[in-house]
Length: 322
Image (cartoon, rainbow, N blue to C red; front, side, top):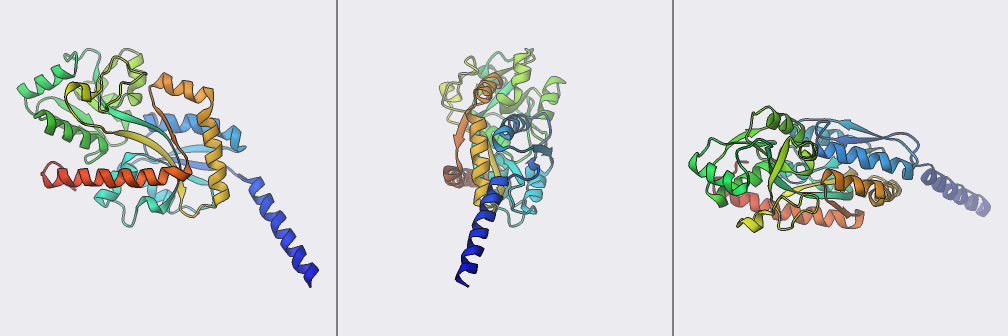
């Protein structure tokens, strides 16, 4: 009997070890809850492609648009927590959706956060032929023509909308708000075809247009000068205290096995640390900013708490609906 128990224990140990060693046994689905061609999509595709070598398996990206990333989140929340479904979280997934109560019962505690890979400030981007040479000229023109200059944000109530509301409040101006659900890709089209006078998102999202000479940045909503865009000043140098921006967090359904989370974190960190990925980030103007599994949850929860408080203040002031 004792030998049988020992044998069973040995078999279980070997089986468990083998299961860990065999992960992944099939393709891993990475959900990007935004349209193809946007900044988040590009970042996730690049790092996932590099992570495949370290992981020893295939990671395929699937774009599921709509609902300010809620449609993609629904897919993840309904997936089996087995290490074969992941999702890319952005500001809206962490802040806007839970604050507005757009997805019943959802919060980030429904997910296992694996790592944060980038963070970058919002910015104002204009077409290259814009009449506004700099941020000060844009603000001056907005004061002369309230509600006439068209600002292209993403969703109403999104991070970019919140940034614009803070700018209007601090600068004493009013823009005509035009929303483009689906991330940065439709904003690019709107800027190029003249639907808006400027777009509000990260410079990294518009790097391809900036490099091609089709667009240029006027300001970044941060207190740090960008190395990738040295000609674009931080807004704090221009008299405004607005610090807002995006980030990309990789996550899986809550209760995903620790072994899978560890394997994914290690694979993505190896990809993140690679010279190829770091050089690519510089080329596209995105700021690398790694936080591993042990730190990212605390950071996300604290960021959520701080931003909820700020949004509540704007709501009480009548500047933001819910």
